Image 1 (cartoon, rainbow, N blue to C red):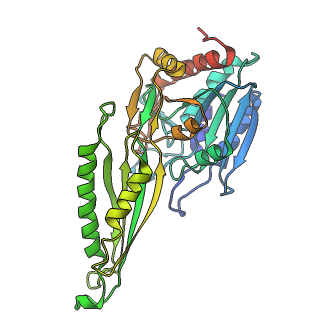
Image 2: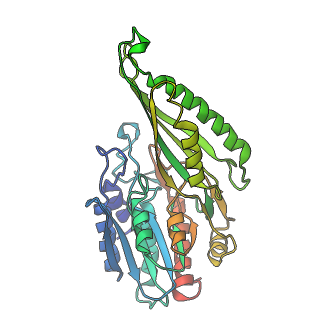
Image 3: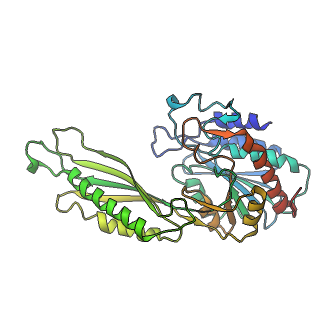
Length: 380
């Protein structure tokens, strides 16, 4: 199959993952496509089911040995509003020297380029294994990556994760802490404030405390390697009450913190709980906080993998603000670099696209990486 044919099939397969059950989809169709294509190329394919039977990881291995290279990515996409797209997000569209479609950049497109690169090695005996890793639910829960870490697989020397980095190697990224704060009050007729406990009054205290904490984080932590050099705190969404003439009995606030590498996320969570959970006492409202986190990532910039990726791409290693599955592969003992053909500016946006000019350079970079780590020397 051609790259375009593979991309077409991958984009057609709806694999949206979401914290909202009504729009959450499985990824098995994408996993099955990849399994079929890789088996045809001689890979030994393992499908790792997750708790949700619609979802799975794929570990496809060509060759054997203790070292080798992992080429990794996630098969899910974010949700989309197709009314904001100029074309069907689930149909590959070529226009203006670009491939448009949901997941072209972030990051189903990477798998088509992996398979194109692998074709160059058909009939060759690999000295070290090549492993293609495809995961589920990176965009919503990291359940796929967490399952791999828990199972201590796969094992290899190096891993390249093809997230959209604009063909630049990434060795550092911030973590992400997603927080859901719930204020439970008591509703009542608005004509008499004594008839209830207004959750929105407590929310005002919470927002003031978080804005103060936001300023403290910015003043206390810096890393000049990041374009946004400080940890950010974003107030993302709020829902509360149901009518102007009722005392607000319930509020929910969603916010996130993106800590720098080296910041203790457990300590951050403890600080949040200490500052926020008691704020409803005077109002007779209960405050609770639930937490989901992806660790920050920081790799040594002196590894052979970083040096090779810098040489092949012509770019020095950089740091980014978005989170990836890199910490989970790093936990397995691999040298990890995040490097892919798409651009983060196109990810999570209407009319997501992959520029055609990125395809051949990425495929050639993958060929060189496979040659170096699986054949024993870089191919020219």
